[in-house]
Image 1 (spheres, rainbow, N blue to C red):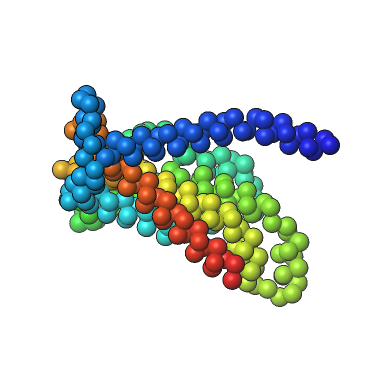
Image 2: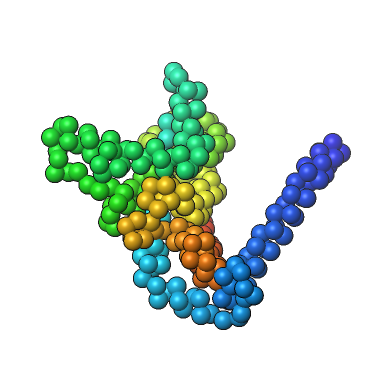
Length: 291
């Protein structure tokens, strides 16, 4: 009876917020979807234009380039951020002196405002006064100096690295919480049976972290697709929008060009891509991890 009463109390606290959030989310998607089918400019009464805004953005080379930049950041997230955050969590799961300090330092970048993160890394990566190019110059590697945040080629990779630095503590914390749920007895029994580190990882850790891996991956995908502040502060899309990602370009189209219809069309495209990639990943991940 106590558990039933406690469960009802929890539901009573959580349900109102959940219902409000769900209704707000559905309403926001509906409004964005509606305006994406109009020529609304924030002032005049919108006229229905059908799918014209969608055709426009997919014929816009700047939007397509921003989509490519976002894709590069997404790939960096999958290939670098996921394994690094897992390795960091595995390290934090061991006992060593100063563990609590390392845990606090690990999470610090995530709680820093993203706009401040962009400012910090701007001084590190700036081609003229940045720490990286200055260090390369001091050690005689002038030829290695690059325009890390001002060119078309390197900027998305730089943004991916900055995003990895900022978020690794958050995802490592989620992995660490998952690792704490795995009984140490399983590892001890496996060791007695002669299992090596690789076998313990493949047959104990990864299967038992299946849900944690899926949650982290979905959060990483959606986080990479909606990245805004770091890019806005580092490059603001310069030069000539070559370093834009989809969200910064959506911001430019919506609030600077006052093309709310096209901006909402971009927002709907981001939503659709996020849902498709996330569901595809969840489906494939469950199949692979269940084998």
